[in-house]
Image 1 (cartoon, rainbow, N blue to C red):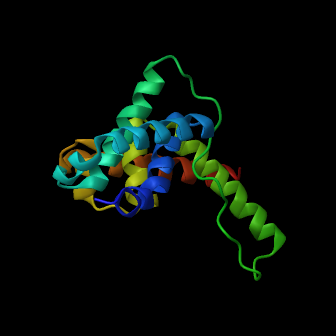
Image 2: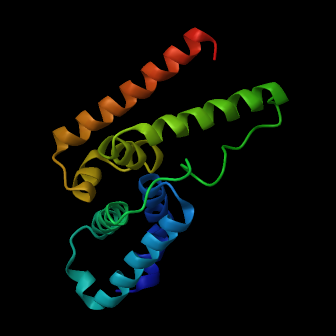
Length: 167
């Protein structure tokens, strides 16, 4: 197996998951680096893994959770490193409104329980299937669906509450 062909292409996905969990860029980079080193050390044994991407995501999740348990505390709210791109047709007011909404959603996602946040990250941002998420997070399919439903419901209710107050 070629490490560059199998593992390297998913490193950004691993980073985004780690960032979602540890909530700090430097810590997320450390998590991914530690996972990559472990994968490199396993070498040819990786050929025995049935779903390599799900296995890497699970390793990343576990490593990130270990970092959190080890005394690290959340610092800043970060979902992704870049804001969505605006079209030239957007007015400055529309761009500012979108940026505010985006920042608010990032903040709300960070307040979700870890299981909800992880499922939402993998499904809605990374685009994984329910089966891939279940394998990556070692959950049953009903747990994945329930966590995703609850995460979306919480965000929807918070956004509706915010818009009804005009904030």
